Image (cartoon, rainbow over all chains, first blue to last red; front, side, top):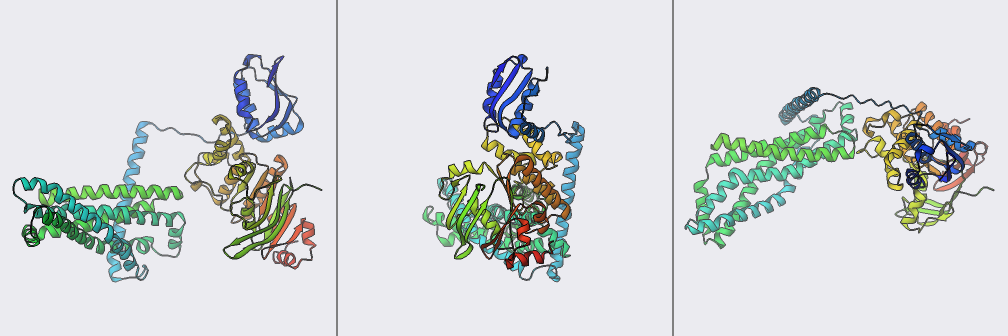
Length: 355
Length: 247
């Protein structure tokens, strides 16, 4: 690149690889002195080269330098790749604050209405599905029960055992100081039955099965499988969601029962080995402290948690947009929302029954 | 005689123990549109993917720009790939980013161009495929034909010397298919590209082909111009054209 008698001489190749260094060289030149851009020594030019020429002409727009001495083929390439003929047809309409707030509210309201409609649909078809199996795959409830329930027994048991051990260990040190060793059984029983069992199981199921449900439905939507079901006059909610809803309704209380039992066993290990309690006295205390109300409410709320997980996962699955990235996004949103609403529902439950 | 820009010799490709390409030898010449055709499952896409090292060939040699790419270090092969554009059968656009960002990917990754220059190139390339209005859209908002055109814009983002198109007309209506063919012809004439097209759409072959490479049962059964193909006595070629009522 050379500036001579108001002419900027460009040399050699003007392509994607040489443009960056030519741009640097151009920055150092006195711009006011450039009136012509001479391309006589240019060997070849590509789209990046044409964009570079336009850039320097934009930078020198005050005296709009002319391009001179370009070979015919160079001129032709410039003509092909010029962006001057491209009219930016994308117009951005800016909304004011109130319009934005209104749009956000309407969007939120629509999502609330949609989620209630979906919930009603799922609950209705789940009840109908007990009596009329049409519109569902044969054996789908059993398959889903295996996936949601049986396959989760291992991880639920392991985490519940560890939780029972931790709860007992944390309280044992304090209780021992007052000679109240036996109350470790009360603590474990009440916390596992009322809170820890149902909530921890729900969080595991939300992370495990909730994410699987959301991603399965979202993938089906993205790959047009949901549309295909609709075109075959099959209700996707009935065919895809209802078996999961029915399966989780059966499995969740069972999983919570396993969780409570294993958690209590975890507490027993600490009670026997660290607090010198006997197995009989530990279980006697547990049966004495637990009421039917505790067990019933613990299991009932686990069913509500299960419904929330399936409804939220389905809701996000059905509203997926885009491709594989959209599937990932709705799966994450579904798990986060499920865990949030499980905790909120648990808090409401505690306020209603124990406050 | 012209020197081949892509030269394949005795290429054997296998999936497990199944031979998909059996000692294939083909030459692709510069500034021509070469159409690789044949029945479904005859190995057209496999041939392309072996040439581009997307699949590892079992044996044989592939030379691109006179360099043997089999056994070439990945780093060296990247230099070759920068000179080749590929239009995949389904577009293969990244759904997570906008149309303009899809086209920006090769420019950002392989050049040091500043963003304003990249933006100009994106606009021009989208204008070439008549989609400059779709710049800020996402792939999910586009129809099948539009996706293919965006994918073509991405394939030519770096002004490649070779453009490879895998079934560009598949799944498109005749009008969109025809406009895509015209665009490919325009690219060949204006940008002097060497274009390789895998297809079995006879109408498309009639519009754009300079040379044909006919595959059947994992082998090359015919190589030549369209006129030569129509006059060919090779039974597979005759049957193929007859089935398509091509004249």
